[in-house]
Image (cartoon, rainbow, N blue to C red; front, side, top):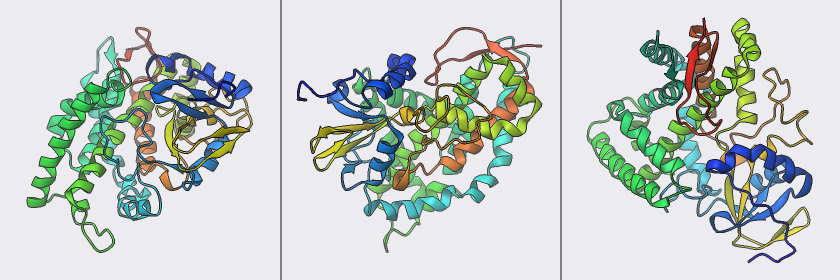
Length: 384
């Protein structure tokens, strides 16, 4: 239990709390950049860029165990490499990094364009369509095919991600039930790939060298579970929120239509200001003090990346979305040893998805109101 004089703020970063989270960040920066929240068993929140960067590099103090996901993704198993601290982490990253190199991701670009156009063909001529399907399926198909996930099960994947990522903050049992199904599914798939390897990441991982040995089935399951959840949800959220924002700002949409070369810069701004991952957790291994606030070993600490991305000490007009922002050192992909492995792919998927969408629909608007966050329905009405 926190002492009564500890700085407190009723901070949450899931569900309806996301509706006003940017207002919360502004208040926290001004009044309590380090504060205690009672949600999810209690945690400290860090909001300043400097504090979060320091924590990301100090794994002797801030451990990712038992998980940096709060609440969990429906499992108590460690998500490899997300929930592994250095030095053990480094071996897993060395195995995985080559699969996400810039050159390999560039090789996926033609297929990414094809998939985007196929999905847009499916809704061609409709007065109103759900663009969240497009946002979800572009990364799901690109990443799923690359990894070797059977895409005939795409609808099942979509429901699992919904249950694991979005239902967990309201009803953990839903996430846990879905997680069990996902583990069973991939346990069977790994067995099949051992017998009949293909030309995909899953098959290649089964042959990877991990300090002189092959990855065992349990390591494979934890790696594939993370690839599945992270690869199919976070990029989808970025594509969706970019379309959501552009639908309400026709002048900025026109700018990108006129000059598509600005799309990569716009992608970085959407990642900064409207990232689908607003925060990740750590657990203190030792007592520490940040910003004059004393914290105890064993306590949870949430690194609010979304707050750091709006830190007024780092960003000019941090709450304005500027699609041509020149200096944009955001940390939406994390920092240091745990920086997102899939950042090269995510950027390319978002860029292509936006490029193809606005090429087909240079003018569009929201057909019904919706929130900025999540991967729920996004009703878009193309305009002539």
